[in-house]
Amino acid sequence: MKGMHLLPLLSLLACLEAMAAPLHPPVSLMSTESLAAEFRVLRQLPDEPWTPELKGWNGWMHQVMLELEHRLREGAYLKPEVVQLLGEPDEVWPWLSRRSEYQLGLSGYTYDASEVLVYYWRGLHDFLFFSCEGPLIVQVDWFLAYE
Image (cartoon, rainbow, N blue to C red; front, side):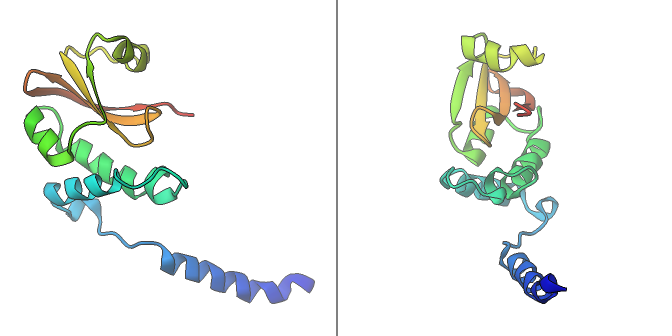
């Protein structure tokens, strides 16, 4: 029964950790403009140290980006509107560039587009991208490295 006196302390620490976790509204209840504003703030935060809120699977940033992907699907918005909402992309690739062929082509993406707007979640390991043909968004999808 030596470790029994630690149980109340461990329970208290677990409660305090849960209380310290940021509370966020469900992303489905947020407006598209609020989600985009939240994304613009989150993407300015430093990558290090690693935090589950920013870089964890189903962390806050991931949830925000998943909901934005759902709302900004092809045909719903034009390229200038997406850029206005999310800010300038982290990278813009000509579709048939070496980088787009490597990053996306090897993964089976074959969308017909003139350029790709790349918005990082976890850098080039995992990102949301918008394939564009002129002002039209023709595809919205994720590249996930599955490391």
